[in-house]
Image (cartoon, rainbow, N blue to C red; front, top):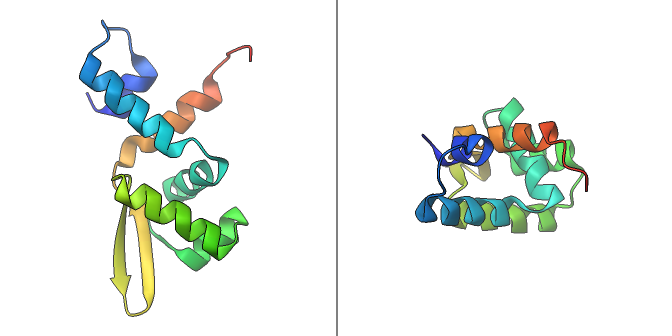
Length: 108
């Protein structure tokens, strides 16, 4: 079972290592811009910074900051072609976390 499935469907006894990994992922994506990036990369397997700027409405400097952070923490991969950088999700099931959040009926 991958970590995203574990976060969404945890019915087993908590496993400390998996809970720590889940907390790390949740902390890493806990920003509207990062969630938007994940959502766009779910729809489009690979996007440039300019394409992500257009789709998220985020300024280049702020978006680059978030992309670098997500790359360093292992959530994104980057492929360079000339002067363009193409980003994609390293963990393709990460979108299931967003699906789980959208389906959540928490009274907050």
